Length: 119
Ligand SMILES: [Cu+2]
Image (tube, rainbow, N blue to C red):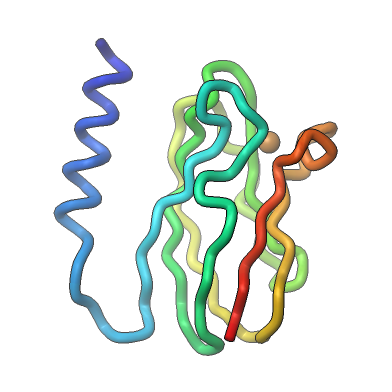
């Protein structure tokens, strides 16, 4: 029940904040650890150089901390406990394909990786 309420609330927040905007500021949500799986959802993010991404990170995992790093851009969310949300801003300064990882021990190896693809 609590999870359902939280889910509905976050949908409401997304609907409230989404749409339109100032051109190069892009809001998105990345969920982590859905059903306890070592995954980012989505695991591919596309952007253009010069964009600023406002990424809301939602740790859906029932039991495990996760984090979100883009080493090439010096992005590190810090630890996000189960059920918690954190928002980060990422200024896209380099084109190319950048790795996204969770560096909690064992998670990267278990497949908790993604890509930021910058045109
Ligand atoms: Cu993780």
